[in-house]
Image (cartoon, rainbow, N blue to C red; front, side, top):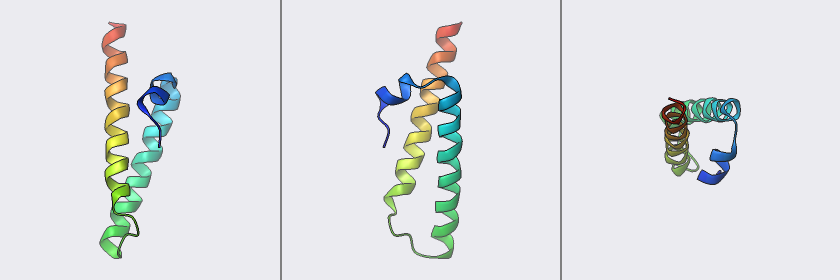
Length: 66
């Protein structure tokens, strides 16, 4: 799991790639949860929170650039 400090050190492109990967993983977990039982249901929450952290950092950078 990546920490906030690790996320802040990433470039904008790396952040976007991490967000895309987390969104794809979340999609697969949602699909899996509907078709069968998840082994680790907490993974959905972790991915949602990771996406939220990344979006927050992206927004902070956007506001700082203005």
